[in-house]
Image (cartoon, rainbow over all chains, first blue to last red; front, side, top):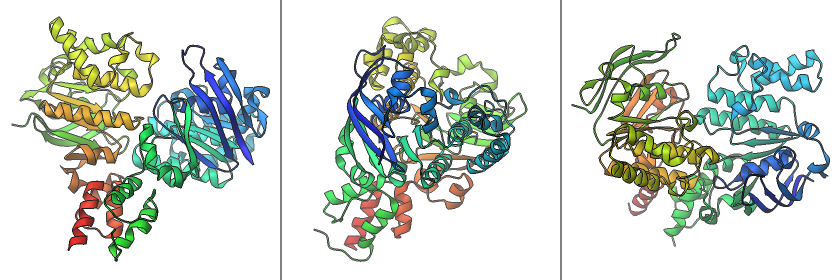
Amino acid sequence: MDIVEVRDLTYKYPTSSDQVLRGVSLRVKKGEFCSIIGPNGAGKTTLCNAIRGLVPHFYKGDMQGEVLINGQSTMDVSLADLALSVGFVFQNPFTQISGIAKTVFGELAFGLENLGVEPDEIRRRVSRMLEVAKLQDLAERSPFEISGGQQQRVALASIIIMEPEILVIDEPTSQLDPQSTEEIFEIIQLMKMQGKTIILVEHKIDLVAQYSDHVVLIEDGSIVMDGSTDEILSDPAVLQHGTSLPQFALLGIEMRKRGYRLDKIPITEAQAVEQIGGYFTEKAVD
Amino acid sequence: MPYIEMKNVFFKYPNGFEALQDLSLDIDKGEKVAIIGQNGAGKTTMVKLINGLLKPTEGDIRINGKNTREYTTAKIAHWVSYVFQNPDDQIFHNDVISEISFGPKNFKMDDDKIEQNVKAAAELCGIEKFLEENPYDLPLATRKFITIASIIAMDTDVIILDEPTAGQDKKGIECLAQVIDHLRGKGKTVITITHDMEFVVNNFDRTVVMAQKQKAADGPTREIFWQEDVLQKARLKQPYISSLSLKLGLGGNNLTIGDFIAGLEQRRHS
């Protein structure tokens, strides 16, 4: 079943002169990890805003077409009710953090308090979330006195803890070092394993290749490529749309150019070992 | 004499937090140096010490022989300029052209020279069409290029870029590589902090690794990414192609796709 369906969506912000999204149609299955890639300014964040209902409920502007969450149009549901099914992690953690809670513990509890969850249950869930997000040591610190990387983890954890069915996550790792980036991807992967649907905007294409099931490439407000991760991220056409490919795919494409025979273009290290490893025993060259 | 000389430098923030311990580092004129390491390892503190925004608690830093303790930050800015990690900490004008012109004007360059520097810097950074716009109407990745252009227009000997790759798309990364090449061609020293290991191997011959407030390693990029103990200490990983080479037993300390293919060809012919 398609948990998210975007139908022929065209949108213009009140202040923009051009349409930011033009005839975008997209289906995301329940439990799928879908990554949205493409150049800066292509409309990735706006599409996220539309799935979360912030477009048009909060931003207003002109919208044509519709977005269905579990078959229901976002126009027919209030933002508050949509928040129960769609969790949204903003690009900038400063935008996300409530500014009300004095501690990281309180920040994680904030959403659950608003949902009217019982105090014992809140304590239990916050403790578990602190552990999953590796935030135990920061539990009593102010959310504003920790590093940018730690804030990105708190922002993500504060949404995950509400257990929305769908998580929309906009560039969660832009300020992070490689290790913290992988930790974020591991948390997201854990959510996928719990059956959540993930929609992620991310430039780190090697990690997109490693973790996602479905890849959508947006350029200039339109979806120009849409398919399985293997199919899209092994296709050199991606490079023509202002987007990079995984290192292993670039290697495979270059090897093919030089006459090496590969059954398919690898996109992850495991695939590269499988596809290229043969040349380290014996394999003919065209 | 190296152009930048850091000798046993320690730095403690006023709240008592020690961010850097016993750092010694020399950088020559015209070098391209990448600085890598985890968040909180001391990278930004280190470069702010080089351009005099911070002064060492202990030890000395000399720029072209001049001890930074004896000069104001405004003076040191004539030799070393710094692009902030967060562009919003740097930008304060209402239009792009005023922002880029600010540094050269402060240096009392004549009007023709200002106009020429601003135009050249904006073109190099691919933002010439935004000159009349308000920086805050432009996306973050573009604001980063505005701050880079502002620094390039000042035409200093040393240019420091703090995480220019964060949030950049393919075009942005390619533009950064061009900017760095161009600066290197003009004999500038370019120091860049980044978390993008592929960007490091494709653009820098020398890499400094920071870990737990100290310098963990300093050397040719090719050597650094094959020192397992250093990477482990700094909690960094090899570039993707190096890791694949290691898994497949392809020797030769490969870093890039070009290295990998050359290694493969060599194997085929032997």
